[in-house]
Image (cartoon, rainbow, N blue to C red):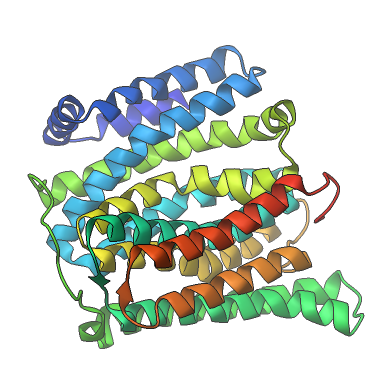
Length: 381
């Protein structure tokens, strides 16, 4: 783990290091970055201190998320909000992918599925709703490209249907799980990856004019050069993945000590911590009246998890997991994903946003979170 950190830091250009130091002096929040080496060192010295590792990991991710947000704004200023949102969603989802791969290798398929479902619901409701609220409190009415928003929501709805089918068929037709569920999930995984690839071709190449930003909003303050922004994005994402791996290793034991149920941990806590970097970027962009970037990050990240990350995990389970993983989720998770997708479709249909739209989305998320928090420990499995 130390070698990875040294390699990442060594690969960072001097100009990028100077940029990070300048931003650290300007933004007091970046002082918390000292907790990154602290949590890595603590994990080496005392790997059994799960509660401390859990709490320090959360603190360490905060400045990394802020740095990732700043770099994303600079890259988006050079490439446009559509590409910037896709880039941020892709790099941000590496954290969820690292978390899921660690759980997949350990055979903790319930945690994998909980983190996938939780990430979809959190990005769709909490991140999008938070962006509407934060942006709406500063700007009376905000506009965004509803074609892009509806496109992402449609992709998300398609993926939710693909996740719903294995569970629905198994329950309704009483088909034997196991071989049938694995075969169906394998075919659906290949189909979803193909649909996602064609969707990227459609939005970024053949019909890219439909996805242009409605308004560019306020320019990022002292925008970084593109090379510096990309370098910072890559290195900080690696550090976020490292800290997230420590977080996952300690979260279950720490959750028991802190009185949190496994369902709440997988669906809410892991999703919030894993998406901290993307949320910071989305909220910051909304405050700068760049709601297209916020919507692109929130819905694009959710669609990418459903259409790409989840199917890839199904394929990888054949190679690194103790047994193949299916796309069959428990009914409560499927219902929450479906409701979140419908809410995103309704919220993005008009191309306008105000702060109260964010309140409604956050209220739905709070309902889900409270339900999972008081859920009995053995439920939802």
